[in-house]
Length: 246
Image (cartoon, rainbow, N blue to C red; front, side, top):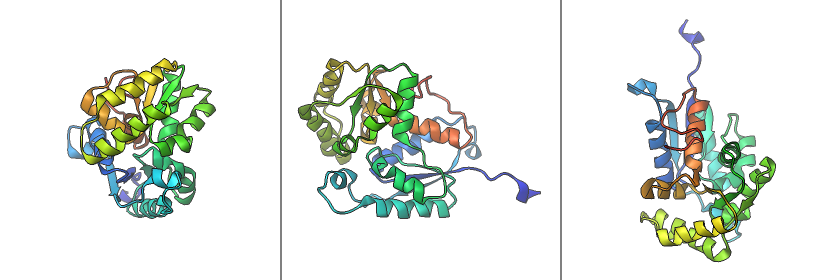
C-alpha cells in the first residue's frame, strides 16, 4: 500500500548566486507556507555554489568562465537528491535557462517569464527593469516583455551604473543600499512613463525587504516563491493578489 502513495514534490533551489538571495528565498518559502508543524512545510534541497563564476562578467565578455557547467552539475545533483522541480533565485542566471531546462529531466521555473506575466495580469502599462548589466544585455526581461506585449524601459546608462553599484558594491558586500542612488534610477524609470518596476535582480529583493519599498515594485523573488510553493502543491499565504507581500 505504502508504495502506491503519491510521491511528495521536492523543490530544488539552485542557489549561491548570491548566497544572501538564496537564503532569503528559503526564509520566504517558510514564511508563506500555511504550516502548524514541521511536516506541513515543503521538502526542499538547496545547493549554494557560491564559487559559480560571475554570470554578468561572462555575459558581458569580461570572463571566459562559463557558469553553465557548474549550474548544470548542481542541477543534476539536486535531481539526483530527489528534486522534482527547480527554482533559480538569480535573474541573470536565466541567460542559461533554455540550456539548463533542456539538460534536466524535471521542470525549471522561469522567474523572469513568471514575473512579467504577473505584471501584465496586474494591469501594468509599462514595466521598468531594475537588473544587472548582464540581465539587460541578455535582454532577459525585454524578451519576456515583448512576448507579453508589454512596453518596457531601462535606466539611463548613468543611473544603470548606480544600480550596479547598489548590487555589487553594497548588497553583495553585506551593506545596506544607498537609497539616494537607488531612488534616482527609479525616478528615471518613472520619467520614462513606467507605472511599475521589476526588482529584476534577487539582490534588489533584499532592498525591498530592508527598506520597505512600496507597490511600485514587483519583486521577482516573491513571484518565484509563490510559484515554487504552488508547484509543490501548497497554496501560499501572506501574498496580495499580485503575488507580492501586503
